[in-house]
Amino acid sequence: MKFQLGTALAAFALVATTSASQAYITCNHEGDCWHTERHVAAPGVTFSYHPDDWYFHRHWDSEREHHWREAHEGRGYWRNGVWVTF
Image 1 (cartoon, rainbow, N blue to C red):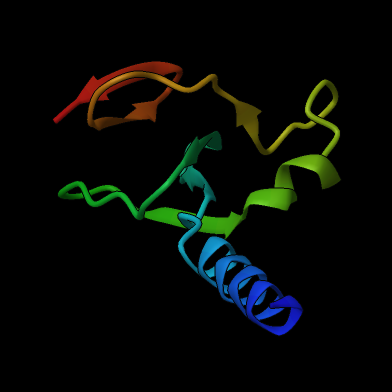
Image 2 (cartoon, rainbow, N blue to C red):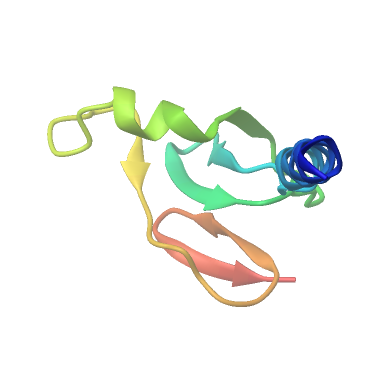
């Protein structure tokens, strides 16, 4: 019984860790950065992607190259501080 319970818990832990969605910090060439769960594609716009924890390694209040933008509902991207919807 203990073996079966241990096996079931191990299998659940494996599924729980592998089914989590990937998270990114996406930035455009103007320096607007925001949290996304998938890569963004827009004609004529170049994006760079960073691991989700990249956010915590920045000093956003004194950053000159990057500007943090809050999450926005719907499909789109930030451009010069304005949300552009697809």
